[in-house]
Length: 450
Image (tube, rainbow, N blue to C red; front, side, top):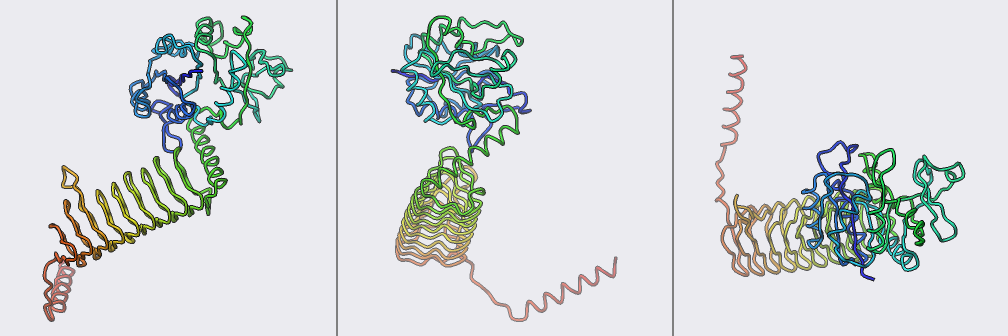
């Protein structure tokens, strides 16, 4: 059955007390909207529609950056979730497949849960996602009769027996497009808030003789974010889940509670992550790599056997080959470090390529930016770059070459050559003693004048 995804992302998020649209607040380094879209897209939808409202242009930009083929429609007035789904109908046209409705402020739903909903859709006209709540509070209750969902009862309308039900409504639904849009067009707003609620489609479906059911998931998956406190709770829940999954798949986390993952972090089996490591988006760490303490990685690839840190920073475009060493207080950006190369201390390598087995001395900098444009540095195989070398790009150092410590390299260095680019040293006997005597006398004179 063809499948389409609708993500509701129109809410203002007043309780967030922010100029940023609620769904764009980040969890694990990326907007909550991206988490919701990613979960739904794991099922392979043919079409994706994002319903925006508050901050629509910002939401559009983020949604299209993640999925350029997504359609973004605007809910000019926020009149409820059913009304929001109605806004998506024209974008789907005559689409006849199944439609899943997710929420842009609910970032923790797992693709596996949505797959269970898709399986249930094969047997029922409408599928709702529910959860067993530790404290059901004022959630709507799902009244079940075996596998059949008879109705959704809001807390204020529930009897004492219905309030005792622990199965609660998440608001996530799936149905065929014709059924879904027929039902949402029939939803009324005869309620205290005067809004059109998506959950009313269950009662309408049952009244028309259609079948409905509920699929359950862990309560943590359904956590909706409406405040900064709930955003922090969502971050904590994501990190706890990511750490548990990493440990389960054979990653060593020496202090799991101190490691922070991004939504898309990939770490291979037998990799070791020391304490206080932070992963930004777009990081892959292969099996057997070691990420040492207090390192920050984003947009990079670390190959098998590589060692990074402590106190290292890998920025987007950093590509580390096997058995590379990136040491303390080293920053790498948009650079390929070939197999066995070492950048061990206090260096910046940006817009560069470093050949196999080369050694970059402490304090080395690739001077890649001239104030307007970036330029590239190329270092060959088996090169020794002396400490405190400034490589002024564009520049190439050939295979087996060497630079003298403290050099400023502005011209290409031929293979096997030694480049020395520093001023000649001059020693002036006794000058230091005479200089200090003069400075001390000046200081004493100045003190008397005060």
